[in-house]
Image (spheres, rainbow over the protein chains, first blue to last red):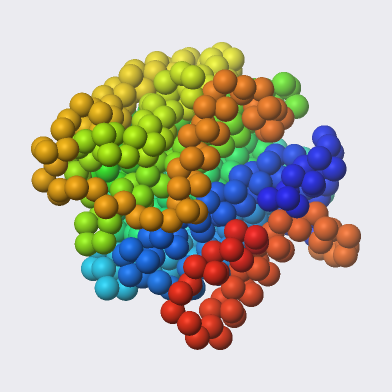
Length: 450
Length: 46
């Protein structure tokens, strides 16, 4: 993280290609590598207490976690579709392994197998997409030798049909990675079955890294005024995906009684909002003063920190032999552990987009960027997004109501015996503070993506 | 494709995470105790 901060300050507004055109050094990349390093550190801090309490003391977790994070940084700095593929695989293989680290857990093994199989399908789509784009454009670099972006090269291609198919397969592949509907089937089972620190890392880090890769591919390489709509357009299917993802994720979350599954569906819905920002960013020509990129970076920071905080509390509340994942198991938490209840409340309000939290400004800035694109389809998406934000408050407040307004005596799981870990308590304290700080002083965070 | 050694400085975050990850996997391979909490410090430092 220190290296990312130093390089962010040093690189300024210049964009420097690295290792040929495989990677790119710019502010956007370093802002996100800083985020991924931070999320990785927080995920490492969640583990010792959870491992001790739930008896999965595998030291491999920490090494694999860092290797997976290195794949995320590769995605944030990618300048070529080949690097995107390498980054996605480096990140994903580590996460498949981490999902299955609780070897005695049948749910954990099922989660890992489902995630692996769906991830393998996504990899197939990604590779086919890259191959077809290469066939049409003659390169996999985001910017060709003559300075033209991949979008221009595809539109000038003698075989535009191949380019259309390639771009469509890329949309599908990334849809799997950020669990966009209808490619989301793996997410609730994988989130529920994986150990909670791994779930936190998946929900916060992997999703943000997938979004970073999409920003690089669709925002930078395929964005601008040439490609998004029209015969070769990726924005039209992405708009549909975004609308369905926000709505289905929210409606499914309404029906969940398991907190991890509810947060999984909430995360799917948030993936839809990320797609809204992505379309808004991709529709505007690079360098024309679009607020889409800075809004998306702010959103990724707010979402990742909030999600880490929420899963940290889930990890804290669960104890040996009882993970307390049902909402009813949280009844009366505020009377016994007011700090944990407050932290969870702040994180849930932020996920719901309530002021004065980071989650509020995150959605506000993304929807503002969408409005500024002056596009009819995006206007409808903003309306869908705002309505769904209001709906989401209902299921987030179900947990708050259980914690504050229900008596401990109504809790069938009995008294709380939370996981004792100084590092875990640190994460529970820091994340809500950052969420409030992002909501009260958003300027610094908003500037990170410019 | 060209390689400039100076480029490595610009991918320091990636290299640090990857190298620390490999060191942690090696450390785990040779570690004989049962308590793994100490590895958390190394991971956070990475």
